[in-house]
Image (cartoon, rainbow, N blue to C red):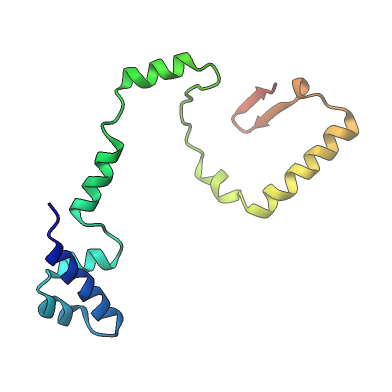
Length: 130
């Protein structure tokens, strides 16, 4: 059950701080614990609000339900995650990626490369495309 008086005091304390007053003074004046007020100032929700959002979602699906759903839908599949080496992560940048795809399209057109003849090759090996 929501304690409306407490929630009102928390909101009043937040407004009080927004006017330029200190958190410590707001804690005392509105009788709100320092940790509660600090969490709310940084975006945390009240317990009742967080729990109501969880109730909307209901229970998480069982693993069997997820597996059956995936089995029924051919276009959905699972894939194991592979960790990308740190060197590759650090070598990437947005500009290089944006320049790559127009260049790739030019090469495909120039040499008439069909998708079934594309291969992905890097330091870990070769992978045939489709």
